[in-house]
Length: 156
Image 1 (cartoon, rainbow, N blue to C red):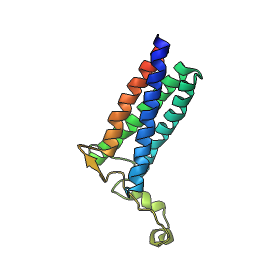
Image 2 (image 1 turned 90 degrees about the vertical axis):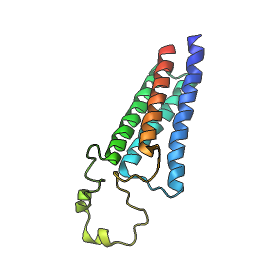
Image 3 (image 1 turned 90 degrees about the horizontal axis):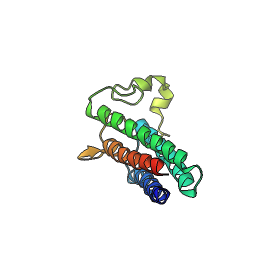
Image 4 (image 1 turned 60 degrees about the vertical axis):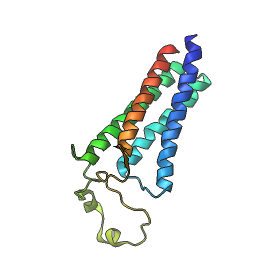
């Protein structure tokens, strides 16, 4: 019986990661360029999707679900950290926060280039907020997905 419950839970969590990663790409298509920390949050979602597909397919489902849960915790942690940087609660990486220290590695030609088509987005800028920022929502929703993954791993 427990094995029967684990597969739907793994499916639900996998679809959740697809939704969060897909949502990030939709926001990008809508003109909200991601910052470096936003990109960092996407990689664990991609890993969780691959691990989830393997778990649902029956390839070491307990191990895959546990690893996907760790991936979800990773993106959740990055999301909460990023949300704190956006709120000014703690400093973020100097390469992508308001100080602009990360720009020192660019040459004068790079700084003045008109060939760059992407907008540079700083990690401490809030570009969208609905109660929480996008990073905050990622932290909360990914934490929920991690819980689902760990329940699925336990029931396999």
